[in-house]
Length: 393
Ligand SMILES: CC1=C(CCC(=O)O)c2cc3nc(cc4[nH]c(cc5[nH]c(cc1n2)c(C)c5CCC(=O)O)c(CCC(=O)O)c4C)C(CCC(=O)O)=C3C
Ligand SMILES: [Fe+2]
Image (cartoon, rainbow, N blue to C red; front, top):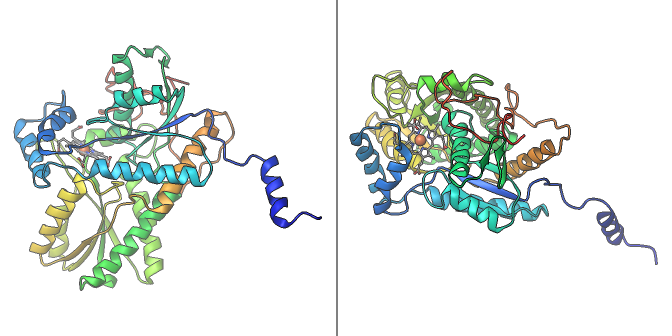
């Protein structure tokens, strides 16, 4: 009997590689910021976050208030668990056998708990995926330093890097097409929500928002690639253009910042979203879609600084405003993250890779350059950082 089309396909699948190669990696570390789960966690969490940074107590109490308004529970941990489940489902869908371990810099499960979990799995070489899309000290190097410091405390840091589990990192993914597409979809949904709230989309201002950082950190972020703010401008322009095409009218947009801290004397990236809404109101803008492209999930900076504070500011100013979603577990985003893991694996195997990017900026190097994204420009911290060209290579 001649083979049916199905059995022919099955034979082919059996003789060609059925699943995308993820070697040399044997585990994926989903590495995040962490957040408190209950009221008693808030102060210890904030102490972890601000350890050695000299943040005044008044500011700690102020930030603590944000958390207490939500019963002391940040949404971030559940959001990371949802992302972990979505990654596991996408890996399984594509037949990729790669266990996912979750860890945080500032709350349980801590970095050292994650390394324990990786060791229990017998992992030798893990690929880390951090939950910040953009490259700066706070979104990249601080994670790499905490990995190094954790290994040092465990007695597992040699001159070349880890003597235990080896770590590489997926490149900053702000300009990966999956991240950009998920933001386009979320903003399009935001325009629909604005219409449902009685706003006028055709005259609305689209305001992209990200976490402010000190000017010094912004400068330091630009040593080896486009600086932090410029990375956002690139994504914002892409999203605004795509949404404009989708809606069939021009979309005017701006980039604003939220969540600044530190002393008022220290310059941070501006304008603050609240000040910016005031300026827009003075210009006669009555409708706003806020898109938090700087964040990947609706964690506390979004739930408090945008949904609580900025939306209240808009109301006081007589602006009809909606906050568009973050990429969360949207399909193009999760699929893109798995593509990035495969890309990193191919690079680690020494294969020639053409990085998939969207917009006018090239892919940021997967192995960070020496002194990339220091906290302050030309002021090496003396803290080792993993996943760089000079460690674990
Ligand atoms: C660029 C950036 C992201 C990346 C975007 C991303 O990853 O999404 C981010 C994420 C986050 N930041 C978070 C929370 C906090 N950040 C703080 C402090 C700071 N962040 C900074 C920058 C960033 N932060 C900076 C320059 C500081 C000043 C002190 C320092 O120089 O390090 C403080 C201390 C108190 C204060 O100063 O406000 C807290 C409590 C949470 C958790 C939210 C939750 O619990 O749901 C998340 C995801
Ligand atoms: Fe932060």
